[in-house]
Length: 112
Length: 110
Image (cartoon, rainbow over all chains, first blue to last red; front, side):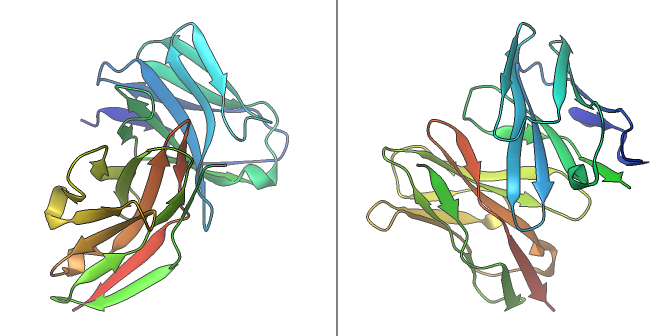
């Protein structure tokens, strides 16, 4: 089983719909991250969390929200999806801040 | 400002030939440097990192990277490429924050 699991792996939705992407991890890491990958842009940080009570905005947090339900669970929500949020989303964990990241398999989101 | 650049969008090599993927960075201090690889329909996997010490870092799958402080570069290398090395490679620099390059697609032809 994967150490970092993302659900769903693929999702197609319509503009204006609320969508939630979920991430769970069995690595026991306190630090969790949500990234967005777009072709030619690399990965950009959306939100990160250092523990259950700590949530921080990343580079591109507008239009997104997160919830850290437990040490092992970190969810990303799009309250009202728009087409330019079509992307590949990755959850990641780490032992230390700015250290090696452990990624999930990704969630491909298409907003029509 | 912190930045990382991968000047080549694509690198094409023949199997058995040396492979180099270039990365340059700009930070005001001494960063951590990373390489990650992404295979199709998979998440990124850690290859190697430089923190301090020896400028030549060895990593997974026979890859290595050379840190050059004067040129602010951290190029990824493999002496003999395999078809299975075909993937998307990302350089990342970690200082006050973690920044990823745009990625380089490597194609190794048989």
